[in-house]
Image (cartoon, rainbow, N blue to C red; front, side, top):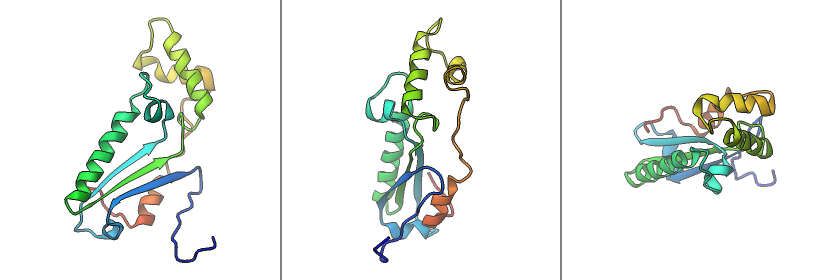
Length: 145
């Protein structure tokens, strides 16, 4: 880094973007309300509004709660992890979508992981153990919403 005046969190695995809504100084203050949404990237739903995925409403709700928290004097945080398709990638995710839509009986929640297993050989490759690191780096000790 060439700017020593900037603090940068470099995640050890994958990538992420952190959106802070409100005063960033409030992140480490215990008396300030914190609303946090940790969200895994989902272009199918977040960007294209796919009918097979329900991620987008959760992201929108998280943003709304974060904004309301900031407006009430607290702070909101959206952590957007770049783990498209359970970290299997966008192409694999869309192959799974197609398999789900084309299976006998149509798409069902009960068969969701089976379709992923059949297409990708695994159900999920996200590594979640390091997820709290970015929250700790921000100084967040508790989450209210």
